[in-house]
Image (cartoon, rainbow, N blue to C red; front, side, top):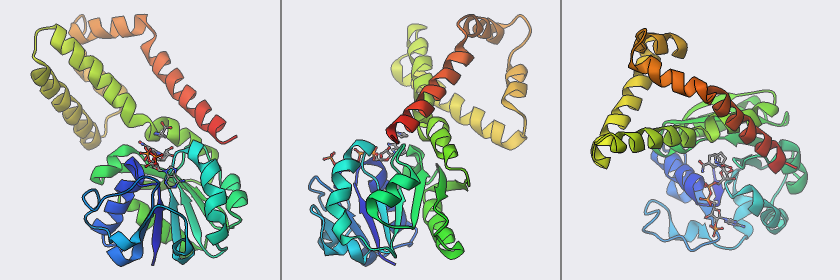
Length: 266
Ligand SMILES: NC(=O)C1=CN([C@@H]2O[C@H](COP(=O)(O)OP(=O)(O)OC[C@H]3O[C@@H](n4cnc5c(N)ncnc54)[C@H](OP(=O)(O)O)[C@@H]3O)[C@@H](O)[C@H]2O)C=CC1
Ligand SMILES: O=C(O)[C@@H]1CCC=N1
């Protein structure tokens, strides 16, 4: 099965490496279309002859075309690839916002999939939410899910609106986690640790907390209560957070991301 990845940046590059590492595609079956010159050093696993900088007949030979360019770049991309696309191909887009209807109409194909992965896909720990047009067969849907699972876990949703919601929650999510971690590291440094020490404390705290929550089945609220003793230090921190309505602010941030995903689709 031939797979073409258009855009070999953060996510497209990750997909290329994951598909090869999981043996979903052999180097002969994997093709790249990327604007900037991709060196053999960046992708030693790829065949140099399968890396293209300009659209061409190789596009039509792919069974699955993964579109991994920025949503803003899609307007210039689709007219350039359209002459090589045919109706039997499956288009798998990971672009934020771009709807199934837009993909299908701009590329004149019935089989379209819209997926929202996230950055931990780079280490096989990604979370991808996906939806597709009704024209994919059950078998094709399984193939797509297996492909996505090469980068972590996946969740199929019937309702396309949930892809915008997933963009706000899990797609952008890793950046919120790093934002919170970064603030904790900065506070740790102000309280006297070196940056390396503060990073160790925060990394291990995140890692331990997530693993514990995964294992013991308690909700986040229950776990928060287990840490916060009455009249203690955690409660003092929560009092400050609540005074600033931090929870509402975080939720508003996610609603902003959701709104932007819907906007990008227009
Ligand atoms: N980063 C993330 O965490 C996530 C990203 N996404 C989605 O994935 C997509 C890609 O994001 P990301 O990988 O971060 O972006 P990158 O900018 O890292 O990668 C996109 C690549 O596509 C190239 N490109 C642009 N136009 C064309 C074209 N016409 N033909 C071939 N290649 C082209 C770009 O080249 P150049 O730089 O020269 O323009 C760039 O190398 C986006 O649509 C984003 O919404 C989804 C989930 C998570
Ligand atoms: O910020 C963005 O638009 C993309 C989509 C989700 C993560 N990164």
